[in-house]
Image 1 (cartoon, helix red, strand yellow):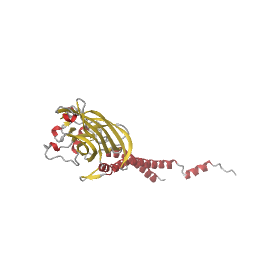
Image 2 (cartoon, one colour):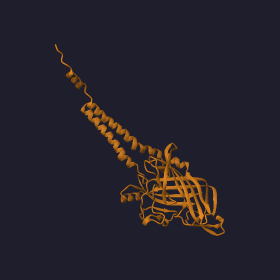
Image 3 (tube, helix red, strand yellow):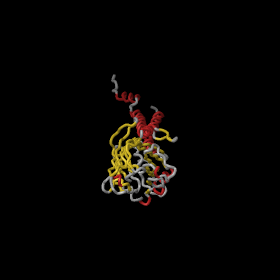
Image 4 (cartoon, helix red, strand yellow):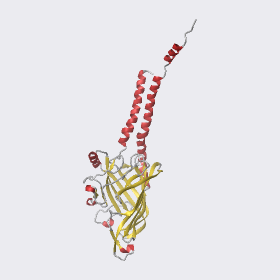
Length: 368
């Protein structure tokens, strides 16, 4: 191999090693961030549900509950907070509406309280863009909050240490880390205002996509953040016209996670909520197993447009990110090292002419 060819091979070897390093240590970290402008919609269905209707003041059974969640990124707030914290964060506003009416819509007149949904909660969360971990941010204008009404004045914020029950989000909230591991994570539960352990259980497939299954057990407890209610005593077999009750709650939450992106592909909750009087008598407030419907799971795996915006599609996103973070560095490094090894091999290999000369030099002289 001539000097010019050798130099070219060395240059190519260094180039491919550089590509491997660039993909692994620059491209992958740059791309493995949650998009600040993300918009997502999920629909969950809970057939054969039991719940207490505050409108009708009676327990209803064998109904179907529907929960619709909207997640929308606040790009401006994310940029502002990222600069102030000197770390990459994303900000999401979420809203979950649950009712026994399909595709529930709020009434135009807020005074029509009898037409309000069975359950409604709004939250603003600030998350680390790489890990998905919640970040405490108590700013008056852009900080975290929780609310169960549409009124801004009712928002419970983390400002000045928050109220007695909400001091800011904790643990994971809307996604898992990029490169999710088979371990236990802390995952936020809105009802109890705290994070609980969520344990890896198994690896399975949804719509052909490999996912990790995680399960979280939220033990039965009184919801301290919920005000005591007054219900007709007759509902609990009491002669009293009205009885004060506490809200009891427990939940088994199961999430199916795409491990490369950390995206939640499917979620399911087995909820039990009760209204319990001081004497121990109780009434079922909600008992339901509610999970993402098939269309939501399909969208999360394969992708689909909603309101003209592409959502989900984590099968393709995971494949692309895995290629950049694993296959591109691996193959580039192998090619680069092979090229450099080739140069070394050719350099140290004995040349035919030199070998022949050495052989002649070592042959004994013939005597006449």
